[in-house]
Amino acid sequence: MRAVLFEHLRTRVFYGWIVLGVATIAMFGSGPGQSHTFSIFVDLIARDLGISATSIASAYALATLFAALGLSRMGTMVDRFGARRVMLVVVVLLGLACSAFGAAVGLISLSLGFMLVRFLGQGCMMMGASNLVAQWFNARRGFAMGVVMLGFAASMALHPLLAQWLIEMVGWRQAWIWLGAMTWCLLLPLLWLLVYDRPESVGLQPDGAPTHTDGGQTGTGALQGLALRPAMRTPAFWIIAAGLFTPAMLITSLFFFQVSIFEQHGLSREFAASMFGVSALAMAASMPVIGWILDRSNPKYVFAASLVLLAMSLINITFVESTATATAYAVVFGINTAANMTFFGYMWARYFGRRHLGSIQGVGQTIGVVGASLGPLPLGIAFDMVGSYDGVLRLLAVIPLACAVLALFLVAPKLPASEAEG
Image (cartoon, rainbow, N blue to C red; front, top):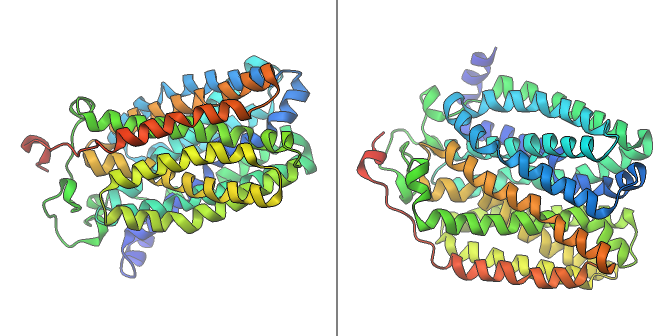
């Protein structure tokens, strides 16, 4: 049946668009492991389990940090077994992890639940989806990454509202069981029937090109690229890593505490959840545009601009006190998140090629998840110590500004001849 579907679809459209569609849905399916979903549960979990905001932020940070340690290995497995097989296993495990999270009875079990759901959802699922898109698109990779990240925007808009509705219907524990079951139903059939790891495996080329051409950093499609160790010896690797670590840390903080920050500023939980939808609309509108710009310009300037925008988001949220200011913040934050999410899938393939992309993405993802693990901690400590988030948010805005300056020195490494063959 799988082969029949492939032959039927490939005669009507470049098959990469089918893979892109499934990857976009997979990105949406990462929602149970994302901070915008956890944000709806934080206060409820704290009250139910009798633990403080600092304790939850610490559990979230440590669990996410431990989860990150396995991502480099998962990247190697993607290179070895292909993204499709890895993602099928990840989806099954993610559904089970959601059920386990809903059964948390204390800080230890909560930490284990955080670790599993973050590793599988925010880590492995996103890495697999972006790997598929990077393999199937090259000259149009920026646009394709902008499209696939619409799945994250849809998750940002729908998962908080879905979580809030499930909580009202069945309580926060049962809500996690339903989130896991929905993820199974949504993703398992699509991954099984429609996905192929690389266009070369079915006699095609990236972007639908008829033949291989000289690839590398010029936007063409040959299967080439630096291996992990040589890549890590280049300045470009660490500039990109810093530029992705910082948004992972700070955007996670804003997602994780958005409901709490808005409540502190006199706005309701329901209103705070609805602002995720506004940010998601801004993301959806801007992602394809950002990808289009990346395909036609030097990405380091777009990269630097996105980091400046992140600093603006950190400052803007401290002035949220009405519908107008909350909406303005949500729009800027949505555009900022759109840029960061597009870079998440774009930069490693753009600067280091496709041949060893899984292992490079795995280490890059580990760095990003470490950032995400640390992000909520300063805000949780600040709130418990002084009862406010605003001061630390303004102080943290200095970090992305420094990374924006660093991004201006980004230079693409040259591929050695031995790596460029293929």
